Length: 321
Image (cartoon, rainbow, N blue to C red):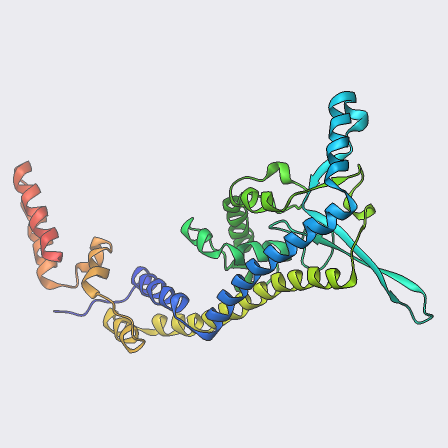
């Protein structure tokens, strides 16, 4: 039997199968990424509980209840209670070089797309966290949650934009920390856990909520954990990309399918040649003389009945299995 020649379709199938194995191998980088994500969950739980305590201290639940009562009674003039998931926390326990008390404050956004550097404005960093956190869920939706990591050194381009947009749509949010009304699906489910009652009508930047230095440090620890997840995701995907770059070079050089299958075998990956051919286009099987002969013979008989043609085709397809 003649060897099956390699082509783009077969190369892509082999590449994707081997890449899938790379992504699911129990490597040190993958384990660190998974540990970082588990730690984020722990930090979110403790930081959100602390935030509830700190916010309630500044805006007691009984005051919130009273103001809601007056809103129901008098309407919009008393509409000063709202729910929010981002807060400016501040403490005054540090001193400057002259011994004067100074305020230390920062913006902490508990939303899925919340900024990781303390800015109140949304950024790509928040989106990077979201795709790293929901990687498996996005994979199941045929999205590419690794797009930021894969394009880390590249500027914005149509390919990157396309996949980022698909991920954001699948997550159910615009990526803007202030567009909560537009959020659905995973983004809404995630964010709904962290809304707290606050009093005031201005934006969060003008309502710094007092906390202690120790409490402030714990909020910073939670935010650092989010950034660490992005970093560990990047490191893991970098290792996969390096392997895939070499894989592409090798597959491109191979002339025959058997060479690609040998490579997979050397990597400890079992590939069924018959399955690759069977699921491929008909044209790729003509290198098998028996199949080619059957195809040509089928073309010669122009007077076959419909039933005979169906039977001939059925026999041909069975020969591929």
